[in-house]
Length: 310
Image (cartoon, rainbow, N blue to C red):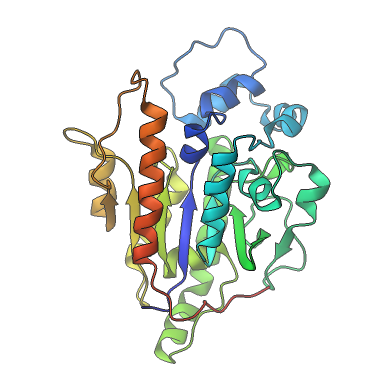
């Protein structure tokens, strides 16, 4: 049992297992060019620059309503609702789309007006942010379990907030560094006094909490989050662990080895990663995600909820 924030970091993998939109499909959705080959060698954020002729904002404005996502599959809706019932202090997602919000509302799709009603912010800011969403989240309630869902790289209805391209990644990282640097003493002083830290940003939760990563591959292009892993490892105040859930690769995996060097614990749930041409690939991943969520519940001992602002 512990009082550390319990944090889920959720990527797009779970949605993909139920036919959701992939990164490649998103790029095709916003692309204004027909000469882009199927495979590019540059990092993923840079691919968006190529596809939009370096005008990402306009491309996303035109397509934003089609990027909201949908949860037409009843099994997918149920597993997302179960995630929201687990009692995480915070759920961080790199998705721009709203599958969690849709599942919480018991719908198959959602409108902008419905999302706006869920918007909240912490006392650190005076209003919900329009971009660089460090202190703004959506409040979702399922069976009286309250969830703070943070779209850490932006959300579909706010094209200005969507982090695509290294220029915006760098600005976001700068803001992250400024915030964490200004709060370093707060983390330590509260720890010495035996007080819980008020969680005024998703960064507080990530650094101080136990973080469970699911359906997010930690691609090396996500340099803001690699910096955050480094920063968490260096935190002097007591802080939690990072558990990275991903099926097992055969042989040497440099990404996994890098994560381990930053203190991340890799958990494969004794399931091997299926080949891309495996016809049972989706079913294997569905089994993996269910097993991973059960494993998280075993590890999530909480004596009381973390103190939160907002």
